[in-house]
Image (cartoon, rainbow, N blue to C red):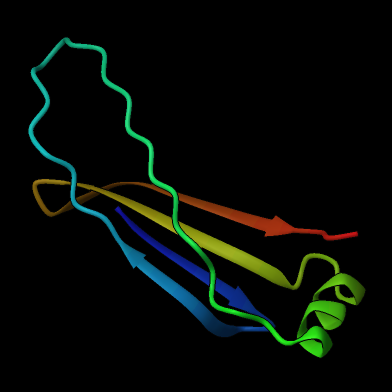
Length: 77
């Protein structure tokens, strides 16, 4: 899985995850806690003042083949 976070079309963070083997037909969970880069107060306010300008793309691969692509936009208060 590859996840990218953007603000006003500028990449602010990128994550690359690798999942281990899961037995077919099994039920599995996976949790990851990760931090975003520090943001200065001006950028935080700019993100609040710019709804839907913060975006993310998540790409899911199986055997190096893209099987799903999720896009999200964010509004902060």
